[in-house]
Each structure stands twice: as structure tokens, then as C-alpha cells.
Length: 94
Image 1 (cartoon, helix red, strand yellow):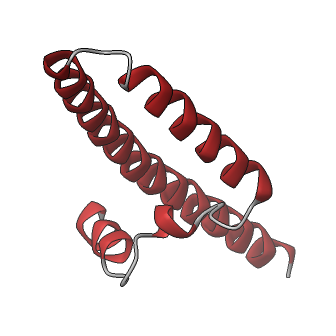
Image 2 (cartoon, helix red, strand yellow):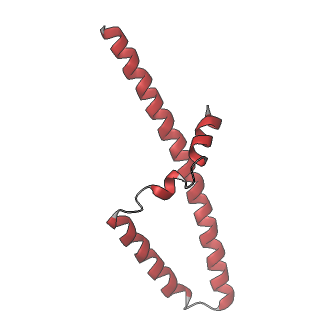
Image 3 (cartoon, helix red, strand yellow):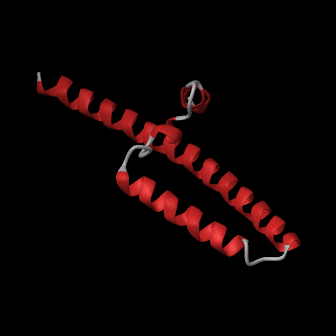
């Protein structure tokens, strides 16, 4: 079952996570704030530390991507279980 859900998750031209909240004003504001803070901090660092910071940020993004995929899988499964429960209850009601 996980493989099918992973195919659904990865089978789009853009990942579902890339589409979630992209147009939300709160998301855009938070993203811009983080980028501004990151850039302001990075310019204060010597080149070698700025490169380390970039590496750290890349690693953090990898963790985030993995967590988002696992969250998608979990949410999908919960939704499927909910549908099964609802359908089973409606079958008993008839």
C-alpha cells in the first residue's frame, strides 16, 4: 500500500507539498521573513561558515521533505481508514 501512495505523492508534475499553502498570504509572509533573516545572518559570517550554514540549511530541507512525505502517507492512510469506517457504518444502517 505504501508504494501506491508514494507513487501518488511523487507522480505529479509538482509535489503536493509544493502546492500546499503556496498562495496563502501567511505562507508567503513567513517564507519572506525567513529568507530575509537568513540572508542578513549569512552576510555576517566568514565565507567558510557561510558555506557550512548553507550545508546545514540543505540538510534541514532534506529532513523537512522526508517529514512531509511521511506526513502525507500517514494522512492518506487515516483518510482511507475513515472512509472504510464510514462506509461500513452506512452499510449497517441500511
